[in-house]
Length: 453
Ligand code: TYD
Ligand code: MG
Image (tube, rainbow, N blue to C red; front, side, top):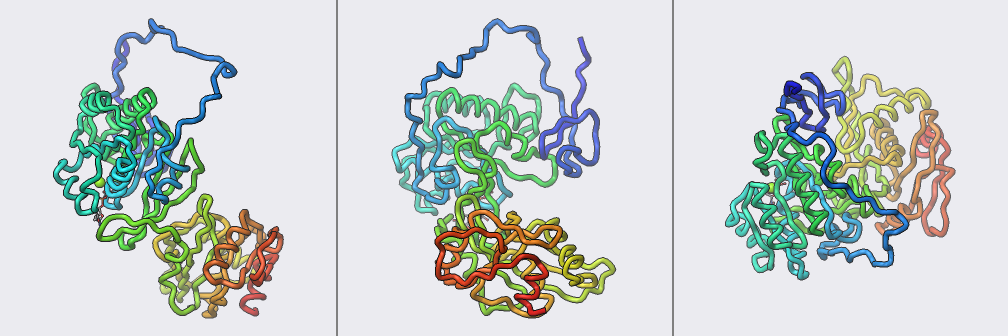
């Protein structure tokens, strides 16, 4: 019999390693690899007694309509889910501790239960009385949902099997423990085993299971990435702690578009939906100042305007600061290099600070032109026209590339009172009138046209 060997697992991404290392090759995280007992190798490694079932593809009946999705009535949530919760699906909602996951899911479970769905919320972190108090404070005291305070996976599955709810929320996956796995709750082995059993249960019994997962920093507890591949839908709840805005983003969805966002505001009475995020993200915009550029972006299927802010100041450091919040810092370095190499505008010896107002995160390459605009405007101390929005991708040659969904971006900008758009020359536009278009072929042309250099 082979000697049981210990395995090393990364708690951030779940990758298995033969030996310990300071950095995980798979995800690049530091200090996240821990030693774990191997999964039991038990008997029965040969052929099984039962045959798995395979059916011909053409023999599957497609005449049955897909089961209706359960809508919660929280529009922002339903849209991120792709139109509502699919029965029998497994979801993961990840996010930093304290960001508002429990609040969101308690509100969602209550909303679903008010629409005649049977919803159970299991909390492994708070006692039922505490959850009830929170529900009362959120004005959900009368919702016909049920609460459970359980951490034993077997007890939870037994309850679910007896009650057959439509939706079950498990808050959080890191508090569960299964007595078949010899490892502490929160370890990769436990989290994986619990998620596997719950996902299998969801499929078999048609119960939609929502797993909550804390994003962890220290590596002692497994993070939500460990179960991402098992579930149908992965949502991340993000936001800056100091800001009241929270963004629910779908990063994987087997039943809808990924990249879709829902915007919420954390108030004294729980999470409130924000149906017009552009107005919200621009609401803090005061007098136009040098270094501010309004980016007309697309998040999922929805246009969202955000303000990119830059500050450029002489540096006393040998290698000047590049502080970037809410944008991809690699992208920002590329744009700085293109400005220097193609337009002859150096940023050496200057500290650069860039952020997106309101705590939003922007990952679209279409934001390049707005980033360049904010940087140039800050450097030249020359404000961009306050009535203008920008979008366009910058290539390494300095040329501007057109981006998708230009009409939607323009319509949103128009709705919010903007009258001018600075965009790549090659953008194809149909049927958007009333906006002054400033078409630009490359970055040098942009500098000349907008800053008169
Ligand atoms: P919570 O949902 O417990 O976070 P998570 O489950 O992601 O750890 O939310 C915790 C934070 O939300 C806490 O700092 C307080 C704040 N909060 C409000 O501001 N208003 C509210 O009505 C509630 C319930 C929480
Ligand atoms: Mg919580």
